[in-house]
Amino acid sequence: MDIQNIRKHQYWLVIMVTAFAALTLAWEHFNGGVLSHHLLHNPSYPSISNYWSMLILPSLAWFTAHTVIKRIKLQHHEGMNAKGTIPTHTKMGFVIMFCVTALQSIAWVAGQQDLTMYIAVGILVAGLFVPIYRAECILAHVLASSVVFGAVIPLIGIVVLALISALSNLCIKPLIINMLIRTRVLKVSE
Image 1 (tube, rainbow, N blue to C red):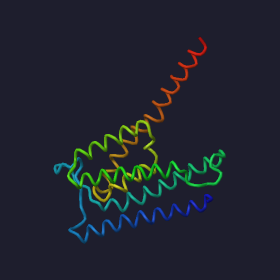
Image 2 (image 1 turned 60 degrees about the horizontal axis):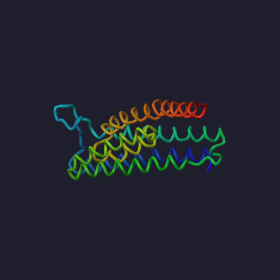
Image 3 (image 1 turned 180 degrees about the vertical axis):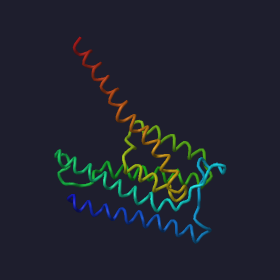
Image 4 (image 1 turned 90 degrees about the vertical axis):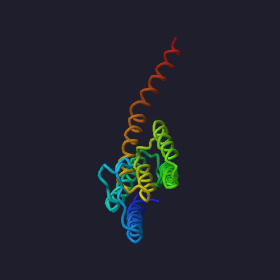
């Protein structure tokens, strides 16, 4: 699979995500009206309509595909991914985050708010060690939770978690590894 073929997948991803958002909104429209959600589930805060999904989800899908293509081109340039295929870790990141977030959404609908919170904390802890700041994880989270929570609130939540994950994986983790390597080098040289 070459880069041009992957670029075609970018357009199909955007089309499929747009169709998903449109079908979700159509289903809501014909079953009692398009929902609005309050921030922090508090009615005293402003409500956010699910119509925002039609802007957020396709934009996020395009951004994700664009980011993955840039990553593939960079790996191709460095000789790491000469075939130009979508890396397995990218697919796995999307699928795992989608499944975990779908479980979180199902728990919320089933009235298990404690389980929903535990899963959110689990995502936060996993983000300290795994790069959930990548675009495919953000798209998977927003996509899987958009049916239950709309697109805006999950986007806000995952951006906060992604910032923590990026700080941990890109700043703190390299510092710790560097310190461990220096400690090991000092012990060996003694």
